[in-house]
Every structure is written in structure tokens, then in C-alpha cells.
Image 1 (spheres, helix red, strand yellow):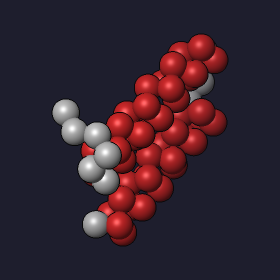
Image 2: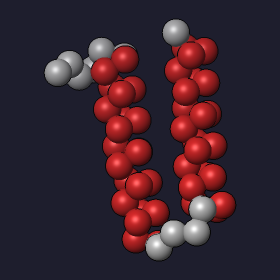
Image 3: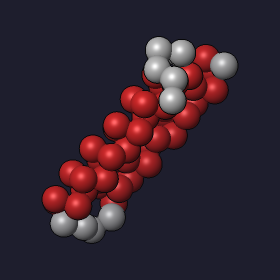
Image 4: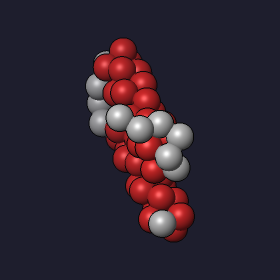
Length: 54
């Protein structure tokens, strides 16, 4: 489970890097995408480790 979590975090990080560096887009849209993805990853991690349950 830990290895899968690390792999997912690496993939998400690479995708965010690609969006930020390779896709021409307005800076505010990039910021919104970054915030949404980071919040989603934090919630996902909290759910995986059993800290928060919905």
C-alpha cells in the first residue's frame, strides 16, 4: 500500500509539473488547478491513512 501511494504521488507531481511547464495557460487557471489537485491529494491521503472518514 505504501509503494502504491508513493507511485500515485509521483505521478500526480509529474502531471502537475507538465501542466505548469509545458501547457500554455493563464497563470490564474494554473494556480486554481494546482490548489484543487493539492487539496484532493491531501484529502485522499487523509482518507487512506484513516485520519478522516466521509
